[in-house]
Image (cartoon, rainbow over all chains, first blue to last red; front, side, top):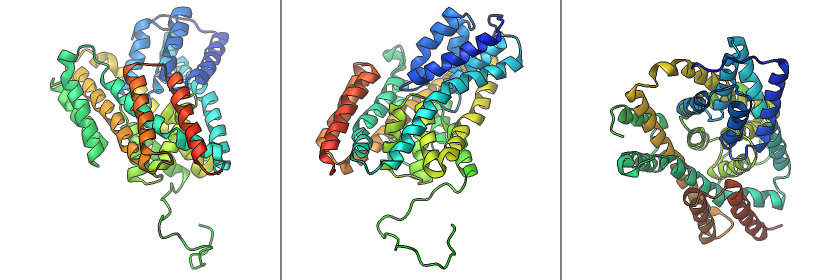
Amino acid sequence: MTGAQIVLGWHDWVDLFAHYLVLSLMSVGGAISTTTEMHRYLVEQQGWLTPQQFSDAIAIAQAAPGPNVLFVALIGWTVGLNAGSHVAAVLGVLVTMTGIMLPSSLLVLLAASWGQRNRELRAVRAFKQGMAPLVIGMLISTGIVLGSAHRDPANDWPLYALSVAAALVIWRTRIHLLWLLGAGAVIGALGFV
Amino acid sequence: MTSPPDAPPAFPPSPVTPPLPRPRSLTDLFVAFTLLALQGFGGVLPVVQREMVERRRWMTQEDFIEEWALAQTMPGPNVVNLSLVIGNRYFGLRGACAALLGMLLVPSLVVLALATVYARFSANPHVAGALRGMAAVTAGMIAATGIKLAATLHRHPLPLQLTATVAVLAIVGLAFLRLPMLLVLAVLGGLGCVLTYRTLKP
C-alpha cells in the first residue's frame, strides 16, 4: 500500500487516541457502524489515510479471521506506516485499539457486573428475556443483509443459493463450521459463484 | 475444588439440571477465545454460539441469548462485548481480560500479516472468488444462528405468537425497510421488555 507521507507529532497521537475514545462510546451496533465518522476524520479532515487505504483496511479485516473490529487495528497500523516506520505502526495499533475498546469495555463490564448482582430483580430479568425476540430478529436480519450485499441479483443468484444452503446445513447438522467455510472458498475459487 | 473429595455435598445435586461445565482456568478461557476468533471469517458470532453452547456447553441457549442482549445493546463490538461478559461470569475482571485478549491478540497479528501479503494477491481472481464464497457462507451461518436460537422462544414467558411477531417485525424493519438500528432497538426492544416485565412475577 503506497500512501500519504505524513508527519505525526505527540499532539496528533493524543488527538487520534481521544477521537477513538469518543468513537467507542458511539459504536452501538459495533465499531463498523462508526466507519462514516472515522472516514471523515482520518481521510477528509486529517489526510492521514488515502481513501483507497481506508477501504482496503475494511475489506482485508472482513476477509481475515477474527472480530470485525480488527479493521481498527489495521487503520492504526497504516496510519503509523504512513508516518514512516514500523515502530509508529505498532504505536498506531495500540493507540487506536485501546481507544476503541476502553470506554465501551468498561461500560459493558459495569453493566454485566451490576446485572449479575441484581439478576433476581424483576427489571433485570425483564430486560434480558424481553430482548430475546428482537435479538433473534436482528441476527437473522444481519445474515440477510450480508447475504444480499451483491449488486446484481440476475448474475449473483449462485451466491444467494450458497448462503441459503449454508444456513440450512448449519441449522440441521452439527458439521464443523470450518468445513463449510472451506467449501465456500473452494466453490468461489473455482469460479462457481 | 476446595472441599475434600469425600465430603458430603452441602445439598443434593438436582437430578434435572446437571451443572454445566466451565472453563478450568484463565488460560483455558484465553485459548478457547483465541481458537474461536480464528475460526470466524466475516463474523465470529456463529462460532461463539457453536463453541460455547453446543460443543463446550459452558452456557445454555437461554444464557447465550441473555448475554447477547446485553452485548448488543451496549456500545462496542458485539462479539468482543460478549467475550467480556462470558469471561466476567467465570473469573471476574481477570476472566474478562483473558477472554478479551484471546479474542484480539492473535487475530490482530493474523490480520496485520494478511495485510502485508494482500497487495501481492488482491488481483488474483481465484483469491477474490474464494473470499466471495466464504462471505456467502458466513451470511448463511449468521442467519442460521438466529434460526437455531428461535427455538428457545417456546420457553419464553410471553406467548409464542407475540415473540414471533416481534422477531418478524425486526427482520422486516432491519433487513427490508433498512430502518436505523437504534430506532428498532428502542421500539421493539422496549416493547419486549415492557411486556415481559408485566408478565414476570415481582
